[in-house]
Amino acid sequence: YARHLDSGEDHPDNTVLLELFGADTWKEFEARGKSAADNQKDGQQLMDLIAQFGKRRDIDPACDEAQAMVQQLQAFITDNFYTCTVPVLRSLADMYDGGGDFTRNIDKAGGQGTAAFLAKAMRIYCQQNG
Image 1 (cartoon, one colour):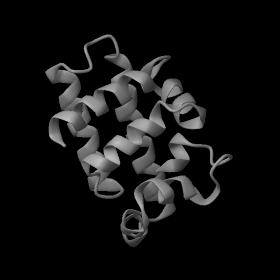
Image 2 (tube, one colour):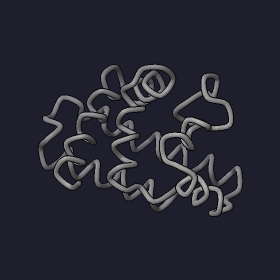
Image 3 (tube, rainbow, N blue to C red):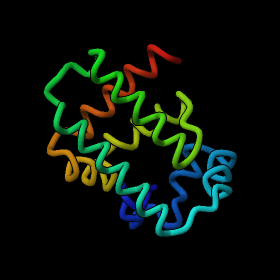
């Protein structure tokens, strides 16, 4: 998952995910035991989903469409990586627009400003569902 959003240069061995989400979430991800090829496929699907946010980044992040997209993203992460609770989703929002590789790679996938739009929509979702 992180390999698609973060080059790993700043956070080798995905320690940033372990620190943000805790050992239980990381263990869940590892326990799924997916092959490298499956993780690669899931990661590309994640980036494709994120690119869809980029195509709609001109809409209000609080609107029903944007919030439905966040719900779809949360479900995708849960189905393919680890249980994406509201606190985990909030942490992801902080990583996505926190600068660095995550922000750059999201903006590369969806266009300049996608990371900020996505993170804002995610935070609104978390406020409404937390």
